[in-house]
Length: 330
Image 1: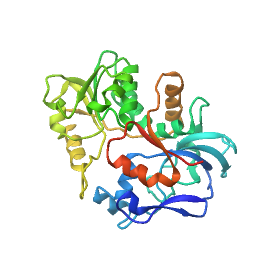
Image 2: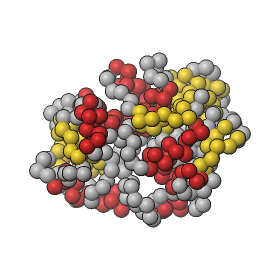
Image 3: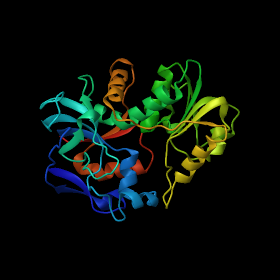
Image 4: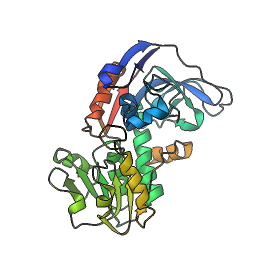
């Protein structure tokens, strides 16, 4: 089968290449999927570039244990492993092939395996590209706003990085929950975020929200371009700060020290909520319901063929994508 393989850490165009590899075989509790679409997420570019460098101590000093990147997937069931009873060949499904070890091959390939507990049937109303693009970003926004923050009507919600993958979902969800939404993005994306429901827009090139007078009940920070202490000053009394980024810089630790400082702030009185993207059927079903009947749409910046996966990862590294970057496989 065709797959995009990673040969080392580095620039995507230099370390990601198209190759022929042996297809995987589903083990017990796994499903073999003929990939129709996948997407690019932060863990993909982090693993391709090997930054923060400290993560290489866990995932491999010279390259990750599996050469195939990608986690989110939408496709058609090809075969099922032992113990799988609720999915069968020819079912259209979506979900994630993510594992914590990076030892399992990913989804930048024609055939991929995923655990059945991380898959559900794809709603007919969603294209394969929309379904695949919704998984990690959509679940992150949904879990953050619905389960961690539990946004209430009338609360003031600020989304930093509002035009990105998580941000485009978060603006819509916070608005659907009755929040007053302030979107932080560049001026070129103002029309987009307002179309998603943003009540106010801050152009980060002209205004620093951490220095303004406005206070927010919830801040979802998908960029972490300010020290956590400064961001927390923009919180209303009792407000919640949700850090959700390793930052855009490289080096040994990149944004990890800021995440650590945010965690420490939670021990000294600031309300800090961290988002764990739980890839369960329950969460996927709730997300699908929001997408199909809740008026939440998937914003896709561009869709590229599998052969251009390296360019797609490189584009995400520019941090200028509006919404998702989808990869069409079949």
